[in-house]
Image 1 (cartoon, one colour):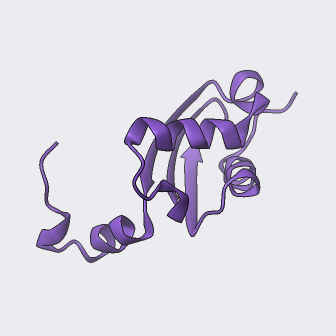
Image 2 (image 1 turned 60 degrees about the vertical axis):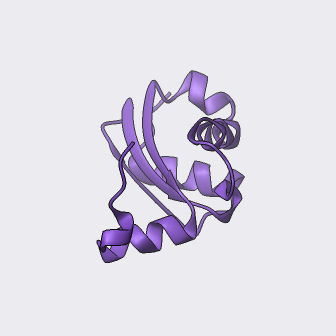
Length: 91
């Protein structure tokens, strides 16, 4: 089975999750994705990640060996894109 490309990963996520934006990078086995979805509103980071894993389904076990992700709501993404003080918060 061919290793998925970042573009494949973007398509897989978008097919299973309504996204305003999805961008992936990686080497076929290890990926980093930025995913923006209104479905993430009022969800914890863990719940957001579980939602992405659900969208990927069996591909997460069979094709994708490691996935790091940044999950944002549209409002969070807009704040991050502006780089303003509003996006500066501690964890």
